[in-house]
Amino acid sequence: MGKVELLKHPVLKLFFQTVDVPVDRDSKIASYRALKKVEQNVKDGQSLILYPEGTMSLSAPAMGEFKSGAFKIAIDCDVPILPVTFLNNYELMPGNGKTTGSVPGVMKVFVHQPIDTAAYKEEGGLEKLSTEVFNIINQKLQNYANR
Image (cartoon, rainbow, N blue to C red):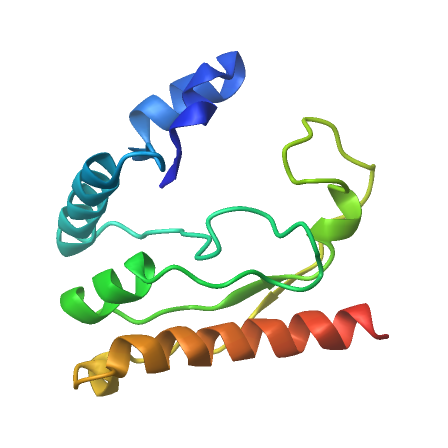
């Protein structure tokens, strides 16, 4: 999934039209339809990459609140979540996250252990899963930032 604005970028447009599901974040109906399409893609066996913050935090490395869509899809489709921490993106893409340029460098990535979503089907499981993933990523990110 990616924000619909990426369709305006000439190089990214082809990728996002063929591989990605664009999301108009200003429309609740369009966002819902995009999530339903992605949910069907997951049920069909496709992998899904989502950034649950929805946008780069203006106070990086502090993260913004996670949105629930990715976690709901994972629980509903009974697929695991694989948390991934991008340790230094905030250093390579300074500013408000909307800049097109970046600082030269190597992206540092940490892949965590998968989380089985079966235990989160009960009442309140969606929030618990979202909080657990947030804490896993945030702890690693803060440890990196405080090195």
